[in-house]
Amino acid sequence: MPRILIVEDEPQMRLGLKDNLEFEGYDVDFAEDGQSGLQKMLEQTYDLIILDVMLPGMFGFDVCKAAREKGVKTPILMLTAKGEEIDKVLGLELGADDYVTKPFGLRELLARIKAILRRKSDAPVSETKLTIGQLEVNFKTFEAFRDRQSVSLSHREFEVLKFLWRNQNQTVSRDQLLTEVWGYDEFPTTRTVDNFIVRLRQKIEANPAHPRHLLTVHGVGYKLVL
Image (cartoon, rainbow, N blue to C red; front, side, top):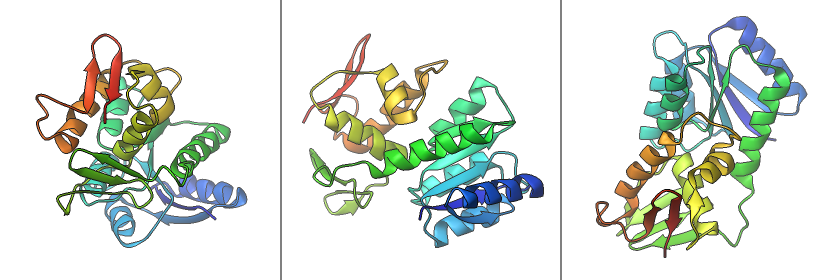
């Protein structure tokens, strides 16, 4: 049974989400503010985190950033009352896996949750380990090492690497990445992908300024060369 953490300060929203998700068969835990939500993320194991942006004491963006910096790999779905593009992009760039804008329909939220959990669990057993230069990536345990030293990768970074690996030596467009990894059929900008790839290169390339593995195909997208 998938376990979901809800971090939401509005009692009615929190109770409504809990009741509906439990009805769908999920095991649900909750936190009422950002700090206690972050503490639960660090101390317990979840399959998905639903994180509100507007939280007392510690905004959801800050919680997401802190969780990723502390090594939390669990997929994060953000709830935001803001519809501006910058808020959506910021959440994704800080390590969120998806977002839903309030007010939202229950069917939409459930579809997002199922899509994230499906992407999290659909890796074939044979596709668990990848070696890129000196970097070793284990998609089953969500761990990465270089020269026996741990390298911190977010859940989204693991997903991007997995998708590029499955299409190794082939050019993958920015739109493909947004659709297959981020889960969007349409998105207002591909800048998110470009910024994401720049940061990912810092972690996987010996010389990010002259990459050998994660290459840009100008005007098209990217490809992973092993």
